[in-house]
Image (cartoon, rainbow, N blue to C red; front, side, top):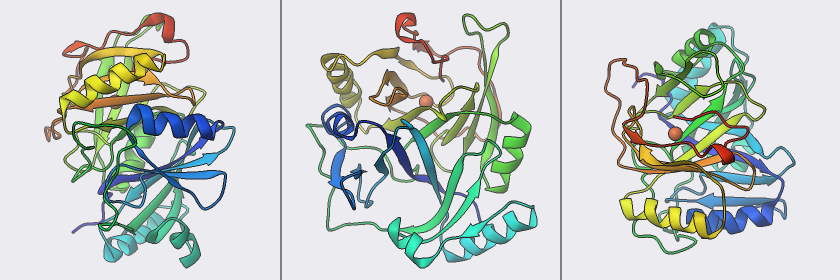
Length: 301
Ligand SMILES: [Fe+2]
């Protein structure tokens, strides 16, 4: 297997209110909250992995790290060599650094935006510890083969530079939306990258204060999109984008604001990448922005 990123494996989020996040993650999202290594950290699970999200008490209220997976030790070595040959600064993590992340090996790089990436292989998978949702669910989270979801980041670099870097990591994709956004003089272009059966794993939108625009999870059953929508309303969290269907990944989804002020998207029914580039000017249906809740957000795709 050629060395290429295989999935979005984990993220670290810096959150200012850990208690609010614990409540939100378990009671609204349905994630399993596990103790961290100290009072300022928690782990969130959604499948057999040790964790998919690490919460760190931190005023950033933002993405701190994205963990991108490689298949194994050969791919790890090949990727390190390729990145170094391309002039990318790579630091191979120590055994202790890998163990602290519950992976076999990790290396540290920075993307052209300046965002921290941990390329790793060998996550700790706990078949002895089945996922236990934080609240009732109709089904589970869809993670097999596609990583734990996707993320849209607010880019600071140009599309060409980003495309070149992520191509080195083995990801493919490009501009998939040219979309009119109220208040913006021209159509906004959005770039989407994939590496597995999930139509996109990373997306890049307009520059903004935070690193992350939204973090998306896919559920196995449509009923769980509806249930989450009810719970978001009950918790009086602002819905930013009403339910609807994306033209690119075909997910039926909606967007809402989490306690850190960026968005989560919950979706169902996503398709695989089509294998050839195409672009869209609008979504299939729905996904109307709720303008009074939209301050600070562009229309995400
Ligand atoms: Fe999304």
